[in-house]
Picture (cartoon, rainbow, N blue to C red):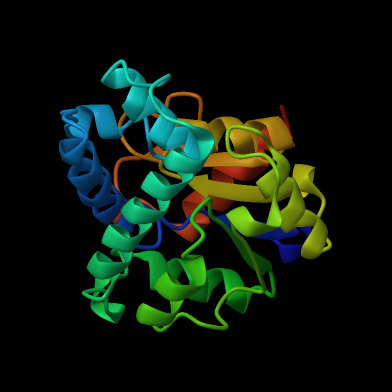
Length: 225
């Protein structure tokens, strides 16, 4: 397929480029324990692709504590969680890039297609630096650059705008339901990495299954519908 059919490919970060999503869980679990609230990996699925403050609200609701704190107190708790998360990030290296991702990026770049990153994490630049991926993406959108979190399409639309890409001629790759909803709402072709992302236009179970030729084939079929 000729490259002119695709303007851009926009990646999520946590769970797609690297498994820093697990570090988010560990940090939230630590904060939840301090509040006397128990959360597990199943509950954590609800937090994927969700902003920091919205994630905190979900945890507080789980413990029926959503009305027990002021906004200022909640902001302090969210920052405390972020400090826990940043401690875990110190362990990240280039070896933590998920299987198949570097190969996929190489194929996309070889065809001259722009690539972007759309992450609700405010630590995206820190993660990219730890993974030695600084400068790999043509544009990076993080939580600081948008007003609305996923599943709102703003973050993917912002990436497309900055990449001078038409969303309807672009591809988004996500591992969270909120992210898939965000991609779909933007008008982009949605690639889901995970076993339960049934709303995705194309779904694989793991990043190692992300084959560029297959993605392009599925994208072209989607365009022709």
